Length: 229
Ligand SMILES: [Zn+2]
Image 1: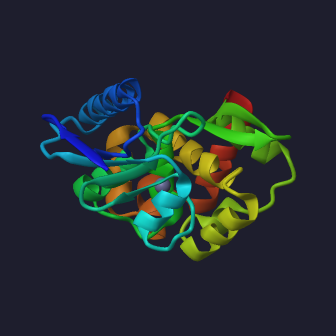
Image 2: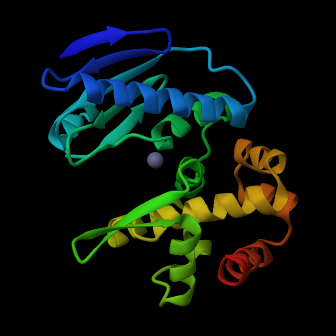
């Protein structure tokens, strides 16, 4: 692997990565830094380590389970991802995990953790008939509500085991964009400050305390997505 570093990043990358790809990776991560500095209203004052691979198998080996995947974050400051002609696994998602754990703590609920990371992306791509289809989280959530729902949000919101079962079943088709849509709904409808209070202590009790009745808030989310989006 080759290595360079600048003010913000330490980058380890595979030998064949072109200079223009390396440049794009740096530009995209600088954009992400700016996004989060605005969101958290603070300077990001540590160096991120980026590990760039040319295939999912290498990411799986770096993760340790040898299960091919496109990217993962490792606390406290590492991002590992594939960047090649077809797969460009960059964006805010993994950095959102790193920064949210650092600045707000790590909630037990996978739905809440993935929801925040997805919220920072807005779009989600699903493969339909072999073609990538890009829609906003709200658009996917709307499809989930008007189609035959395969699972109930109430069952996965605070039950991470159940959430991952559904992720395995639906291949992230609805689970991930739905978590992002729910987060966006809370932020848009009730404000960022309240959402950050919730994330810092993401329990069922705190959801009720901050947003009111559990069933009502989920019903309001459905209504908001189906009628207003
Ligand atoms: Zn994630």
